[in-house]
Image (tube, rainbow, N blue to C red):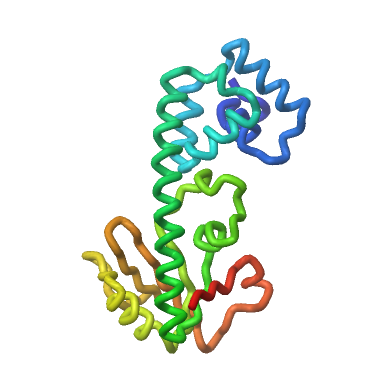
Length: 204
């Protein structure tokens, strides 16, 4: 079953997750779920594949679709959400620690993507975003110092990763937390517009 050329499962998931879904559309979603016209197994599969299970749980509850969601799926989404909430809390604590280590070594860290979102509280519920690691931008001339500083702080280079790779990045790990140090090229610095969404995070 499709709407135009887009499968209805994908459309349903997108409309549930989208912040631009209006009240009328939300009522239609609720009616579709109430009449059991939703292929929940496909919705769960799509959400899992895109790492959106925590966001799906939050959106289903916000749109009052939770009572129409199968009990087994609700249990699963609760478990994934709880896991991600705990993990993101640990990530934020580790981000503060990493930023402090780098700042004390006079290496200014610039937080990227999910790291910046966590530090700024971009999402009302920080558990909605699934994160693999913490991306931190450092000056090219400071990358070796940054790696050394984090190693001194208890981090290590995971197996299979060189401290300084051809991808101009270094990955270090502490338990299950991975920090990716990304180098700012000295020959072609990022434009101010490209840094608009980044956060200069400083902790003494």
